Amino acid sequence: MSARPARGVTGVPLLTVGDVELYYESHGAGDPLVVIGGLGLAVTEMRPLLQALAAAGYRVIAVDNRGAGRSAKPPGPYTIEQMAGDLAGALAKLGVSRAHVLGISMGGRIAMTLAMDYPGQVDHLVLVSTGPRAGGRRWLVRLGMATSRLPGLRGKEPRPALRAQFEATSRFDRTGRLGEISTPTLIVHGRSDRVAPVAMASETHAAIAGSRLVLLNGGHLIALLPHRQGKFVAAVRDFLPPRAPSAAGG
Image (cartoon, rainbow, N blue to C red; front, side):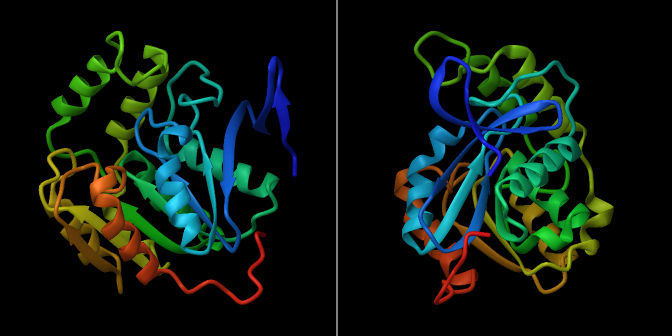
């Protein structure tokens, strides 16, 4: 494992991949399940979800995307393809050759890119509150970016890094390539999602052969809100293969 503490931050696990240092966490034991966060979302903010998935019998790995959390925040522009490459490199450094991959919102675009560009690394794919292109009410995302900068509210990402992520996910469009995904795929979406309309989930489901679509009551944050998390984790657990008797982490 190529990881080392950051200078001045004792015990913070970082992986050097290309031109960035990436923070990661690993929870539980079993077959590896990689969780990719959305716009500006840090691994530390997903810990309840990570721990719930680990309790289901998986080694849950999460990496802060470039521009978020404790990972490096180089100047933009960023691309979704670049962030998928960062993650592929991080998994290689961790010795994980193949894993289940779960992506939320922007993280779902990173996840589907991994499935297209690095198909050998993705065992099962879970796409959450996402789509192959930007859609819905983008002003809600811009408003969230703005209010996250107000004193006392969540969000410590430098504005340029957050903007670089926003522009990367806004430019992304692989609508015409969804049919390339042959990985077993689960699509989980909130019925009242205003950021990524539920019609986009249906479109993704129709384009990925053999995919499974699960609609849950709730909006864009169904995977992260405590009162929605139980049904979400159950849907993921029902889709993924059961824990192998002698599961290895890679």
